[in-house]
Image (tube, rainbow, N blue to C red):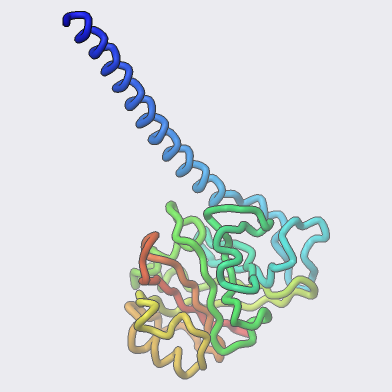
Length: 234
């Protein structure tokens, strides 16, 4: 009987060691996965291919031909190429080089015109930590920050690039099922929605006839969105 309990104790110890090793591997993988995703989101190698107004995208640029613009929001981490796929799923998990990446890309709604001549255009980006991608939109939900970070640039096209100024003027939290903020719509309709639903508005910003929305999720599984609205100045 004593030998039986000795064997059982040895089996138990080995099982517990196996459980411990398995749990350790899960934790280690989780840490590695978080580091990998953040590292990819922080990859700024594409900045060397940032276009210049009046010129063309550098011929050696590895960024795919789906790039339609480049957005920069002054004083933030937002300084990214803007992609546009055939659907709004194409660049959810593809970086600007067309490679798989959980951080994805900043991309234009597939229903919008790639030259940003629509009354209302929508950009999407993942909500990443440390202000990466569109995680930087969190900061705009403060009147002081909204007023002190109200400028940016949108460089449109691949050849003879046209540069437009941005005036950031409002932010809102919306539910995709209760609000048309994520549907390309008329200027009057979106202006009315912003006036009604915006949490903060900077009334000192000059208006224009084109509005650009920057949209991101509030959490991984949610129908709520954070949206920052900009005027596009031609």
